[in-house]
Amino acid sequence: MSITSATQSRAASVKTALSGNYLDIQSDGWAKQYLPDLIEAEAEVFGKRTISGFLSQVGAEEAMAADQVVWSEQGRLHLSYKGTIGTANVSTIEIDTDIDGINANTNHGVRVGDTVLVASSVLTVQCYVSQINSDTNGDQNAGATAFITAVPYSHEHLDNAGFGDSDALTVLVYGSEYSKGVAGKVGSNEPSFTTFTNKPIIMKDMYQVSGSDVSQIGWVEVTGEDGQNGYMWYLKAEGDTRSRFADYTEMAMIESEKAAAASIVNGSATGTDDKGGTEGLFAAIEARGHQTSGVSGVNAATDLAEFDAILAEFDKNGAIEENMLFLNRATALAFDDMLATMNSYGAGGTSYGVFNNAEDMALNLGFSGFRRGSYDFYKTDWKYLNDLSTRGGINARNVAGAIRGVIIPAGTSSVYDESLGKNLTRPFLHVRYRASATESRKMKTWITGSVGAVTSDLDAMTVNFLTERCLVVQGANNFMLMN
Image (cartoon, helix red, strand yellow):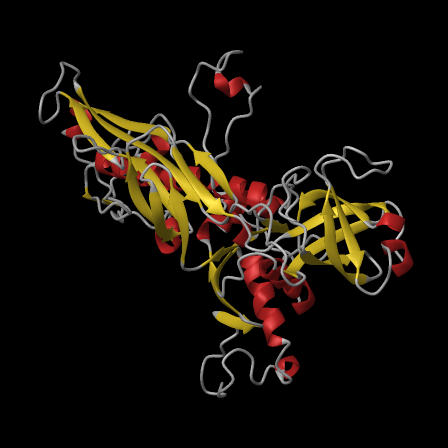
């Protein structure tokens, strides 16, 4: 079955007024003697057209008085590293990176006396760390500061346990052991954290109408999301501009990315222009979070096996118990179908959805949430991913860059704010806008011209909109983007 659509209503505004927007009586003049039956009110054929509200559900807004926001996030508590065997017959191990892939060649936290698990692709062995090579270890790897000597408890050397030179390893510190009457640890481990920054962008828009048009009555009764109503057409245009700008303030926080050093957006080879972009939600998840392409790249998490793979990634990170699923229509239905198959009567449709469906009531074919393992997930449709004039248009083409959903942890995170100099608890997502005691740029609106209050000799009314803001994505390692 195929569906063919014909768009009869103009989906977007244009810069100039078209003749099709007005009742044209000049083409026929007064030749037609019968008065047409006019339906004055506009038909809202696209329903609610705005898409804002996503960030208000999962985040918060907070003022800032600087050109950038800087925050730091805690590192992992336990010590786990990736590396390779240097020489198996003397039990040397070269530490390359920590478990997240950060370079730990010269600053790992393993110390003499630690007990560690040394794991390869085929076996895991408990070992005792007998030496940390700060200068030289007397073998062919002399001077390599990344080498430790880990002696197996059950064998003399790593080669006796079945390891070979250059084997890839994971090293996990699980404790320590000391002889009686000896000194304690040498050297302390400092907690690690990673610092992130983002900068606000300035966004502007405006609407202008001449003084004559402000004083002209129309025959169409206009309505809009911003509460405008009446027979003044400029009310419609100004209200739509305001609603569109409000949507842009949210869409920019979702879609924006920082300009690369060589980007022409910077305006010059020296980068003196400050149009450097800002890191939005999708860019933050792509850089610091997780992504899944689903089964065969069609829909993310359409069966439990794929979804369990998502849970495994969350287990490796914060393991936030409650999460929100913001999905496009296809993925939301795929979730419903996946959950329905868990019911033994799902194939016959007798108890699909709410399991007390009766034959004389409406059948519930959807699910609003579910629990898997130790995680709770709450599912909701995201209009931004469905509307044809926003991301829904890209998703409809099924092209590269289509985004079918996002998993966002619920609750708050504790981070150190370097501007305030203390730990703060905030939602994982929050918007920072520029403000001071005398000026707030959260959502600024002002009117200029000679209509109403006169500010210039321009025979027009200009409505100006401005905001300066950025998004802070804390703990992006707990987010999942569904491509």
